[in-house]
Amino acid sequence: MEIENHKEEVPFAHYEALFRAMDPAAAAEKFADVRWDGHELFVKLLGREFAIAHPDYCLRALDGGRLPPLPAQTFLLRYLLESRDEAWGGTWKTFREMPWGEMYIKPYTGRVLTRAAFTFGTRVAAFRAAAEKMGAVALPHGDAGYQFDLIGGYRMQILVWEGDDEFPPNAQVIYSDNFADGFAAEDRVVAGDILISAIKENM
Image 1 (tube, rainbow, N blue to C red):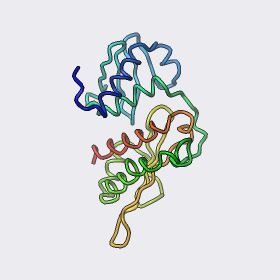
Image 2 (cartoon, one colour):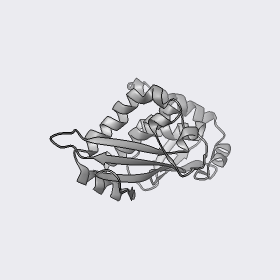
Image 3 (cartoon, rainbow, N blue to C red):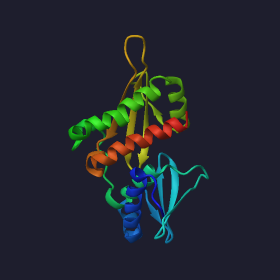
């Protein structure tokens, strides 16, 4: 395959090769939410279930809908290869409060917080409608706030404040505490990207 989009296709190709060499049964045993039927691994992302053929990668959506973009597919492969089933302790953390958060806070702020603020804080009603369509849990914080089940036992919250003549729109993204041990900082950034893109697609 000739690679045209190096930013997305090179990482995907790398993890696809690691996935091909992976033991799928052992990978499924690591997670309570992953199932292996001898041909495909089944995993849910934001409430949608996907089947991933092994060893030759092929992704299909069990709801018949559109496949997620390549970064989300790479995230699924990294989840199976590198993450683990960490229990949620019941508390929440900002990105900055987790390991390596301070080091990655600048790119995270641009890719996640600013994007969320100006995507949702300028269209709060549409954000609410999209979140409810996705089955998110409404929260009593911000001008609008919702809790989402990302994958396995990992949860995320997005809080949005609408902009006005005096203040720009604002947003905060909060992670269940198991993200601190279950995902690398890079994957936490991608998780924010994936969640924002999924909500935007439903707006």
